Length: 233
Ligand SMILES: Cc1cc2nc3c(=O)[nH]c(=O)nc-3n(C[C@H](O)[C@H](O)[C@H](O)COP(=O)(O)O)c2cc1C
Image (tube, rainbow, N blue to C red; front, side, top):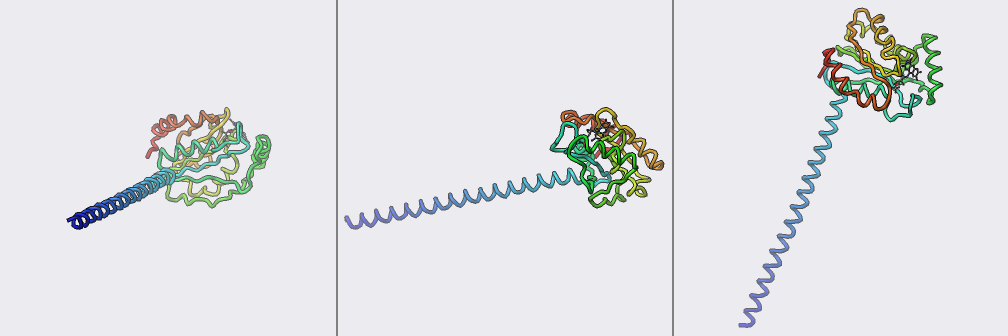
């Protein structure tokens, strides 16, 4: 009898141990499954976030935002993002546009005064400073925003390099100037587009003072302006 009880007891213990082990390993499996599910879902989130960002800055409609901006050698700089670029990004997002940055082949000096002199000399010489990056194919775009800081009341001459290089294709587009400035507003930028491209439609431009807070808070004004000129997503 005692022997039978002992065998029965050992059997019960063995079953309990087996059940515990099975349950424990299931628990671990289900934890690691949910971990891997959560990894997958966080990967999905990351992927869709980066897609979202991509589509924000690389739209598929017929609007292109061209801009020149600097982070060094600007008033109250150095900046993390150039004042004009902040505005370019707002316009790009609001219109689901593509973007092209004009990058100088030779960077402008980093102090505030030196580029001011250089810009003046370039203007007096009617220079066309070289652009480092490949020009975009603008043939598929209807509306092209062209933005820059005002330099001595005008577009920086490197923007004129872009305008001249693309003159044929810009001739019948809708062109929209935008600037940041420290007092001159749009300066002569809109007039420059109107006189160089008499057959283009030049819409009223946007301008804002090149101060950190002011440019960062400009999104509402930009949306209102885009509605006014009828260029939206
Ligand atoms: C070379 C140079 C010339 C400038 N000329 C003018 C000007 O004529 N009128 C004006 O309002 N601001 C002028 N500024 C100020 C810039 O337009 C202003 O700081 C702008 O927001 C800079 O933009 P960014 O940060 O995108 O480069 C000039 C700045 C520089 C460096």
